[in-house]
Image 1 (tube, rainbow, N blue to C red):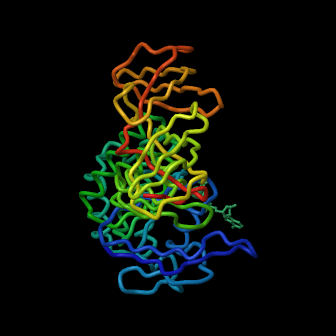
Image 2: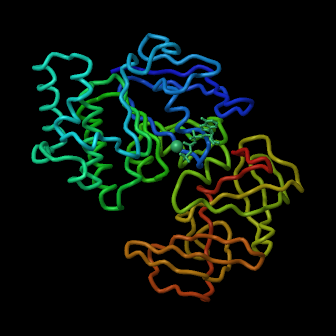
Image 3: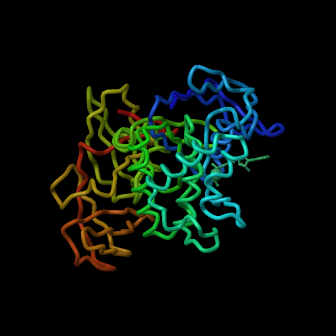
Amino acid sequence: MAELSLKNVSKSFGSYEIIRNACLDIADGEFVVFVGPSGCGKSTLLRMIAGLEHITHGEIRIGDEVVNDVEPADRGIAMVFQSYALYPHMTVEENLSFGLRMTGNPKADTERRVQRVVDILQIRELMKRRPKQLSGGQRQRVAIGRAIVREPRVFLFDEPLSNLDAELRVQMRVEISRLHKELGTTMIYVTHDQTEAMTLANKIVVLRGGNIEQIGAPLDLYDNPANQFVAGFVGSPKMNFMSAEVVGVETGNVTLMLSNQGNVRLTLPLKDTPPAVGDKVTLGVRPEHFTNADGGIANLTVKVDVAEHLGNTSYIYANVASGEQLIIEREESRHDKTRDTLTVAIKSSHALLFDSAGNRLQ
Ligand SMILES: Nc1ncnc2c1ncn2[C@@H]1O[C@H](COP(=O)(O)OP(=O)(O)OP(=O)(O)O)[C@@H](O)[C@H]1O
Ligand SMILES: [Mg+2]
């Protein structure tokens, strides 16, 4: 088990900078999740921690050791990939013990470690099978088992569940969470899946174009995104963004006109230095932060485009005249249908404001 830190870590491939000045502190036993759009550098960052990519600048520490020049095998990390990479001609048991046998680990200790994995992952009945006789979920369990037998200081996971169907993903997600509680080992996990990020992480790192945009606890990022990018990236369905113009500024308050929502006006509290009258800003409202007409600060009249009724809740995709689409959650209405006209209000305490560069105004 170990803490891990990145200090000003950068990575270039040729003249193309993939990771820029990444700084990150991970405490011993933390579960950290990297999220961000495709190509933003998540896997590269993970591979640098693993030692599979050299870093161009900066310092990576695991425990109290700088590992920049330490070979992957000597870093005390174990990595689990999306593709299981099991040896096809070996049984599960042989797959689990292979790495330890190769390094000359004493036989009794190898057996003890394999037995422990079998107990933790409950895979006793699979031990004599070969990978092709296993389901996708079982293969991934074995791949995770192969990481556990190494008793690493840090586990690295790169989208380990993305080949699995929806139901198995949920099951494996719960297993990984249980595994983390049981082992207490530091874990770093890359995913595209919002639910995995929100439920597994103690800490989420949001990346964009090689930069760390924000680091925080899942609900902190959800409630208090640092900028419009993080606000739009964390949460599913996504936060709505509405173009607005500042039409009035008083101490502690700003009045906006929603230019694409029938010029509706609303006033929000604002602690920061306020923008100036005439400035273009963006109002951010999560789908669940709409309420019934007159229940909030501004009434918007919208036309239902698509209504998704999920049973416990409904998502309404609504169009407004100027073409901005809104996603509105309506827990208590299962009856809205295409072409209905709805009036909804915004819950003021949850609305967020961003300047034209996407920075948060609070
Ligand atoms: N060996 C390489 N040589 C040159 N460019 C590379 C190399 N490996 C990755 N890249 C580039 O680095 C960027 C980051 O890639 P990376 O695989 O880290 O993204 P990612 O966030 O993991 O994306 P995804 O979500 O699609 O897996 C991409 O633009 C990619 O094309
Ligand atoms: Mg990747």
